[in-house]
Length: 158
Image (cartoon, rainbow, N blue to C red; front, side):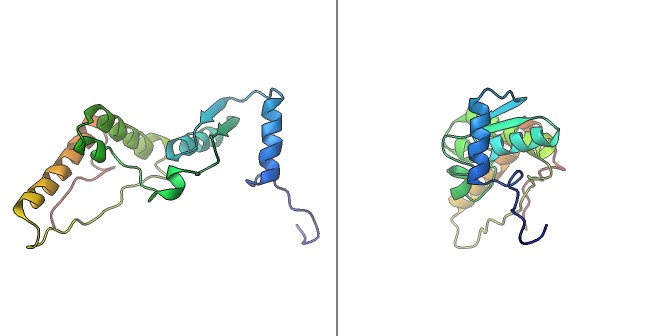
């Protein structure tokens, strides 16, 4: 493409393309998959469906990565924060969703990221025990979700 040729936005996410796509949908265009919500899971589902050759319409109340995805650390958590507040069902569901993303839906996009939690002599025994219990509980969530240890290694002490 030379510098004088107009740039095609048929594959780019532009305002013009968005407008055309919305007009086509409003006119009754049929798609194979409709994804509602473009957070991490919705965007991953849309990408997966499109990569399999399906036609996809992905919509959100605002726009791609408008809210949580845009403002967050981009982490896909496994429910430990829900476990800490006693929401066992939601914690398990989050761990299952994380496992699905890591092993089936988007292993090319989602991977385990190690982190170090320093427990020094300044950390009280109570807080150290609480942290270690939380790490073990997180690993139990991994087991209950059926995520393989090779996919998501368990906690270890340095």
